[in-house]
Image (cartoon, rainbow over all chains, first blue to last red; front, side, top):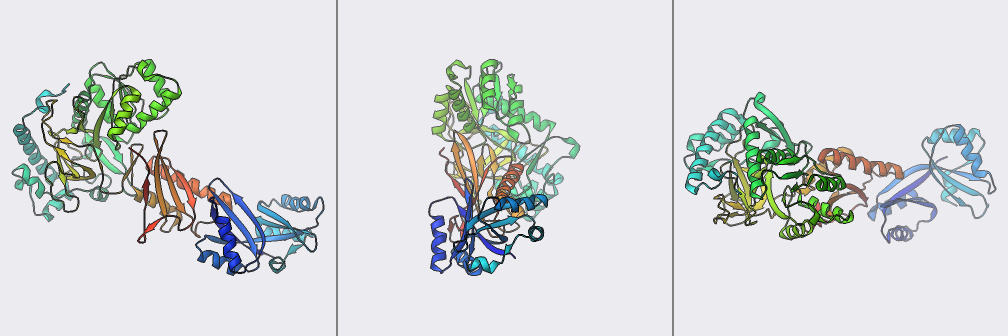
Length: 143
Length: 433
């Protein structure tokens, strides 16, 4: 039900993002989804990769501060109203979205939205009751 | 002008005789009243009766900030508490401040010494003293205030901050003497320029600046930009506060130490041995008259040298050269003493582990700015921006609460902070004095 996401602390200075990409490339790690949140001084890069543990290890070995968080991935039909339906479930259950990012699946044409909720279990429960399909971790790692 | 002609121009022999008499009285009193000092003297195998000449001073053990910390808050007070009429405090090296007390006589002596300081700087009865030193636990504000009143001047107790209002009041009240930190004086000059106020239209004539290190270059800049004479004054709360030493307006070369109240020594900070007159070393003070909080051979960690040649102003007191540095890592930010260990203390209490941090000090628009860079360890890292931003704000707030100076916290990647031989460089001071 849950997807493991790694997050990396980055200072806002040139070349840091490239460095992360290079480290992952060298370790043969594939990035499935990513988002970058930024402030004036720093950013947080969030990644879903094909091998979380290995990615975490190589980044740490290269001196990055790395965290691991559980998020969930929801498949949404690529049509108007898809996102609204999910967010409405959250609203009715008073669950906060901490952040989210989306990408479109190349084969099926569906959108996948990655959510970070303040109450993960409650969110999973609410989505399931509403009949929304939550993707398994493996499904996303192996896209 | 010399405020106290009799004492400030005492022939050296008479002055030294007076110092010895006062030192012996002090030692008797401290030995009886302060168990901690007695213990230290017993450990050094020295008794008050052993002080037969001023040279015997060096037999006495030093007092350090660590001794003050161990006796927090009132352990070194030498009078019954009901005799204490005032308490001030300055930065300690950790979470606790250094506390000092004053009896009525101490306050009286302090006013006398600040009146001497003001007078040496060219102020007189009838002046309007614009006192922009901070009022509060810091000794600067009230110390200068009482001295200006003793002098017979009218004091504007404006304290620090709100520069535009300060300038309006200078214009409207006709301030003639400015007292503040030298960097704040430059800030006032900047704001005047912004407000299009020409300093020549003000009545300011002289400024007495202290509480932070400055240089001849800064003096020239202040004098030119504010159209005043700038005088360097010196003091530290452990010894009394401002009024320990002051330049005279005649020479502006070295600060006369008020030697009838304090004995200055310059020692080699490594060996503790006195250095020959004129050589650079650590400044050490013994207070001769203080009742509530006397200190014996207090190590200031300030670097200076003594000028023993007579001065054209007529004062017979030795002069200390303006402070040229420190033997420790203490910083002075906007007149407030800051120890890196205090910042470490705050970070430690938040992170729960030994933090990697660096303090970067700079001067922007004549004001000191402090940035604290903190390496983000896995321990404090979060995938959420708001958590990290809250953490930064929390560190900023707690440093402000502890030090009384604001800073900007910048979260940085691990290993960003230079480590030399495994030990991090804690302070980068980019200020040009």
